[in-house]
Structures are given as structure tokens and as C-alpha cells.
Length: 409
Image (cartoon, rainbow, N blue to C red):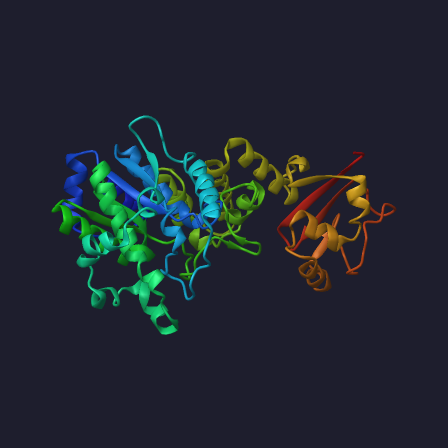
């Protein structure tokens, strides 16, 4: 099957320029393409996962991905989809985040010799001569046309800074540099980047009279059109230090039945025949499809062992009888335990609650249990006469669990 048809069948493709020409380009040669990742955090999150999976499909079809880390553009901030100006970051923070993202991306793409590679647009953006840039690049951009771009419309009502207005030029210039240095002919990205990507492809065609294409992927939304990947604790991060494999697994295990087939198609490499079979399950049987899906997505992100532990932990808590030791666990010293005997302290300590204030509100609402018993008092401590104060499990709501093991030192 043609790689474009593979992407279409799995639900990736949202918009594309010069579609018939792009089909022919894929047939004719190994296509070098790029996808940008602005390092505004020290981890990718599940919103990045669809472009990464699409890049993997394209690479498996024989094409060459460039993962562009936006060390330069992150110093400005992309206004796309933002109602307010992004917080300015220091160069040190950007460099740290870029290094973290490069390491993460290497888990999903083959960065062997002659295959995928990572570049940082700070290498060419930070040393630009501004006057030369305006004369060479700015001359190809119409302000009137730029102001009609979707990424600027909502910001115009609240105030769009000239700093952000430059972002489109910078991203377009990235495409031109990658075309000139690596023969890159295609930019991919989320559909919220469509306006920026159109200008990049247009700039390459104007400056180089070459082939240049833009291809956007669907954003990860549920059946109501709401973005997926948000949890009580915030974004669903791919870094296990920010979101445990257990919490990651549980997120997918608990999605709406109507979203199972879509997520299987976009977020796993399962054959579409199997995706459609699992997606057709109804009523209680759909839980088996969710179990398979949650394991498979967690395995891709966190590895086989972590996925198995997460699944075992979930089944131990919900009737599967697996090893309870797989539940997210904190080992704390006696001293730490004595200084955090209250349940609200422990909830904040392990991260089940973001703050003691949140823990108080949750307990007051009847949403916390210790060893299966509801915590009724916001000042309640772990009582060794009622619970084993060496090993005990806290429960937040129906799905949040954390186990404490108190050690001597």
C-alpha cells in the first residue's frame, strides 16, 4: 500500500498541498521530510505522539525523517492556538529542554547512519543578520495575507506582538534552510500549524523554484472533538518521571468506548484488520479491546517490562489478582514517615494530589481511602493500630493508587 494511503486509512492526514504531486514524489524517490518540536518543556506529551507515529510510518516506508528541535523558535514562541503570549524562556532552559526531547525522540525513530536525524534551528536562527533576513526573506511575505492566517486571528483581538508576528517567517525559513542543506521537500505537523506550513512551502518554491509540500495530521481529540491527553495532574507526558507507566496505562484503559478504534489506528502499529476487529467490540467486550490498546500504547512509550507491570498493577486493583507490588510505590524512611503522618501530607508527597489544599478538598468530598477505608477527617494520620504502618496504599477517587513502603533508613 502507498504510504499516503496507509496514513489516510489510519486517520492521520488532515490537509495536504499538491496531493497528486506528493503521491508521485513518494513513488519516485526517498523523500526527506521534517517535523518541528518546540522545546517549551523538558518532555514530549501525548499531543506530540501522533506526528511521531506518522514519522515512524513514513520512515518504515523508506523515507527519511528530520526531527527539528526548535531551539531558536522557542525563544520567540508560536502564537498558534494561544490566546496569550507565551512566557519567554532563557537560552539555558531552551537548551536543557531541547536535549531532553532529542533523547526521547530517539526511542521512536531509527537514527542510524543515513536514516533519521535531529537538527536544532538555533544553529541558523540565533546568528541571523536581521537586516539581511528582512531583505532576503521578509520581502516574500505579504502582511495583508499573513493577517488572514488562522493562527493570528484570535490573537489580533487581544493583542499580537511583533515578536510573535515574526514566528511565521522564522518557521518558513526553517523549511528553506532544510531544503538547501538536506534536500528536504516536505514539512509535516499538527493541523494547527497549517498556516505556518503553507508559508514555508511557498517560500521554498519562490526562492528555489523547487518542490515543497505541507502535510498536516489530525489532532488527538475524543468523539466530542475535545483534545485528549489531559489528566487531573495536567498533560499526559511521555517521560515516566512526569507521568508513571501505570498512570499512562490507566488513562488509555479508561477512555470512552467510542474512541477505541481511532486510538488503536493512530497510536499503535497494529494491522488495520485487527484495529477494526477490536474497535467493533460492544458492551463488556470493549473492555478487552481497551486492555489490549492500553498495553500496546504503554509498551511503545515505556517498554515491555513497564507496560506489563502497569497492566499487572491495574488488574491487581480491579480483580485480576496480579502482583500488588506493581502498583506505583514510594519507599520512604521512618523519619520522612514520622514527619508526614497525616494523609494530606502523604497525598502531596507522592503526587496523587498537587498540593495539600487539593488533598484537603478531596478528603472533605469523600474521595480518599487508605487500605480501602474512606478517610473522613482532613487531619487523619496513618494509625499503626488500624493499618500496617510499614506498608499501606492510598486511593484517590476510583483509579488513583499509590503504595508506601516505610524503610528503616
